[in-house]
Each structure stands twice: as C-alpha cells, then as structure tokens.
Length: 315
Image 1: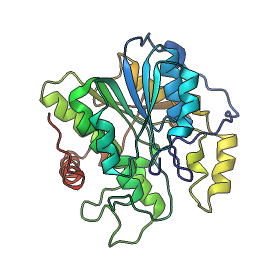
Image 2: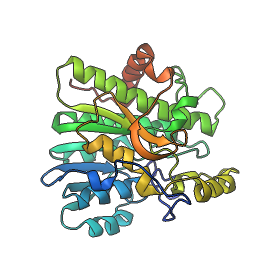
Image 3: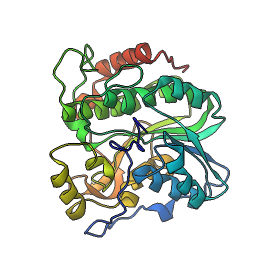
Image 4: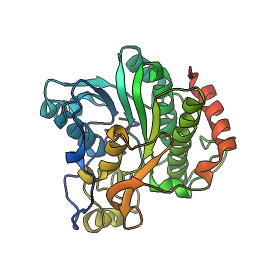
C-alpha cells in the first residue's frame, strides 16, 4: 500500500524471507489455529511480510481470505498459494475514497485484521492531506473499521507495536503541520493511536452490549522490509538487527493470529511475544504504556478521528 504494507518503500508488512538466527520456542503457534472453514477474514497489507504470513496461515486453516492491498498484482501470488478461497481487492489506506470503495462491496466478514502500515518515511502526506503514518496506520484503519463494523460478526484485530511506548498523541497537530517533523516520533504516535483505538473500540462495544471483540496485537521484532525500506540512515543497523535478533515474519504473525482466532483472546486485550522483552517468542498478554490507557485522550482521539475521516461509528 502506498500507505500500507505493500508500499514499495515503506511497506508495513513487506516481508523478508529470511529466518531468525534463534529458534522461536513457545506454546501457541499456527498449528493451533482451530478449523476456520466457512469463516471470512479480511487482512490489510496481505501481499507480503506479516500480512502474507497471516493470510497464508488462515488459508491453511480453511478460512476464506480477502487480501486487501494497494498493489493487487503483488498480492496475486499469495492468493494463488492459498487457492480458490482467496481473493484480492484493492485498498489504499492513504486514500479515504479507496477505503470507502472497498467497504462498499466488502460483504459480510467474521474477522477484520488491520495489519498494514508504514514506518518512519520522510515527511509525506496521504491523498487527503494527513501525515502519512498517522493517516495510514491509524486513520485509514479507523475509517475502514467504522465502515465495516455492522458487517463484522466476530472481532476486529488492530496491529500496534512496541514503539507505542515512546509515543504521545498531539490532538492539536497530529499531522505535523506546525511542529517539526520527526519520523520516529510520528511512527510511535501512529502506533499509540492504533492501540488506543482498539482499547476505546472495545470499551464502546462492551458498553453497547455487542458480542464483537476488539483485540490488539504487536509482532515484537519481526524481520520484514518495514525496518529497511524507510530511507533512513539507520537502515544498515536495522538490517543487522533483522539478521541477528529478529524472528521470522511467520513467527511475528503469531500474535495477530492468536488475537484473530483464539477463543481466549479477550476484547480489550493486547497480545505480543513473551520472550526477550516482548521482541520474540510465543504470544501472550502484553503490557502497554500509561498513555495507551488514558481514556480521556482516547475519547478525544476518537472524536478527532471521526471528524478527520468523516466516518461515524454506529455502535
């Protein structure tokens, strides 16, 4: 996605095929996914990296999977690998018109997995004028979820990051129109916004008596092109980290899969790897920053997001 995981230079799930140096040891993995026959999943940014690994694992479990990607050609090989239960639909999260077009014909969905994103590019803006990371990682998925929510039967999964711990939400200038742009702070803000959105959605669904769950996840440190295609001077260091410390994209997808299919994944929960300070290993409950649990800011962020996207949630 230009603003999503299949973006040529800033892909959120643009994957590396390499495997981590250290084997991942843990209890829950893709082999534990229950039979998903007859269930429909939408995975954003499913053409590569974490999204690809997520879509393939669901396909192997019998699910029907819609690969929602900006570049449909790049997604076609993944769909072919899954087989006849997979389809590809264009979705550019950096363009609200594209989000609305996708949602208009999406049909009924069991699980929406908001996987796609961008990380630490130079200052760029979406088609609607938002800072690219805030506009793609948060606002695009916020709008998509709101437009689809009345057709989602089971749950919404939102992919955050350990980087949320370093973020803060600037409700006055989230798009860096007046303050100095700093790519990593902008990334952390977007991932904090993702987590706060998931928590707030869970609270609102619960208050409405809905059975739909909102569940957040993070991949820990997974080797994808996300770390090395952001035109940053840190690219060589991150490339080395991918080789020495990171787990594979398949293992990095385990928390998202757990959040999406496990009966034990609770609404309002946050799941990630449990080993090496949350960077790798089997999924389990993850801690979050104090800022992520600020309900007052979360409510204000929700209102701001509705105003910016023009999407009102019917809960």
